[in-house]
Amino acid sequence: MSRAADPTAGTDKAEILRLAEEHLCPDRVRFMRAAGMELVIGRREGYRIWDLAGKELLDLHLNGGVYNLGHRNPEVGQALVAALATLDIGNHHFPSTERALLAEQLVRTAPGMKYAVFAVGGGEAVDLALKSARRATGRSRIVSVTGSYHGHTGLALAAGDVAAAGSFGSARPDEITQVAFNDADGLAAELDHGDVAAVILETVPATSGFPVPASGYLPEVQRLCRSSGTLYIADEVQTGLGRTGSLWAVTGFGVVPDILVTAKGLSGGLYPIAATLLSPAAGEWLESDGWSHISTFGGSEIGCRVAATVLARTEELLVGGSIQALIDRWRDGLAELRRRHPQWLVEVRQTGLVIGLRFAHEAGGMIMTRLLYDEGVWAMFAGFDRSVLQVKPGLLLTAAETAEALSALDRACSRAASL
Image (cartoon, rainbow, N blue to C red):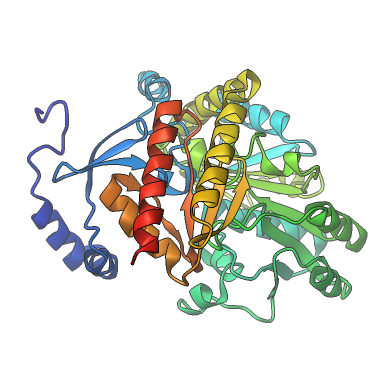
């Protein structure tokens, strides 16, 4: 393949790994080398990625859902190219056609929301959500979930996993309290103090391995928040944009949060953008103090054009029923996989296309990541529960690609059981 067709063609993989280990991410390079997965992505298209050395992989990780519509989706790419003909990032001090249209498009899809504030990534958007809740309530304490992940910026990191926050000195036990996921009683006890500004929840916690919300849990979270004057923040960075069978996962659970955060897939994998959607109460500060939060690159006009295309395409897929058909295909396939490997695959956690597979070994997810790599599939273990493998099928994954992925999972389970 020519370099024109693939700009990475001819790039020396060993040299890239050396440079990355020396200047970029030394610990990650060494970890992946020890695991036998020295992946340096070169060409990418649809749900396929190719290593610089030529190894082809079916991508079931999607960088946390960034590539919901596939790598280099043609429709999204065309929107980006067209935007570049007339737009740049714009100026955050002024109204903008692109930002205004995308804001209206987003709040239209999310019941209870009135405002959209744009950011570059999910962590920045979560920070703004927490700041808005504190401002709206006049309170400072935040309640989050044990083993949660909300990003690596200041408040977002502090609200996530304690060990991860502590590694950067960001843990704030006086301001951030954590309770277990699905523990409504524990949450109620914290809210009884009357000093909590916000409860922030990933609708289905990703890095903990996608545990499924218990029946009635999220409606009870909403009820408890309403009764205590606390704002409910739904972190939909990984579960939003059609991944659960509705545009926003909270909709499928019958709840309306006060704030909703979206990122990752909103970018189409082509231009960074995130958004914090605010209810009238949560976003009241925008009416009186519009310069209290600014982000120079948040809501780049080019990014807004890309995000508008992503949002429109995702809604089309939901209306057309193809996402539900894909969900059903995976549900049937995983049920068969569980039947064939009951001693190894001990739990299937599926909320639409948000899937966690728990195995009968404390490092089962890591084992499966390595075995699937050998099978030509890329899927990542859950960072906070390495017995679980995260499986994130793309919204446009074909029936043939689904069958390919399930066959690879079957072979990997057979190999794991014999280890």
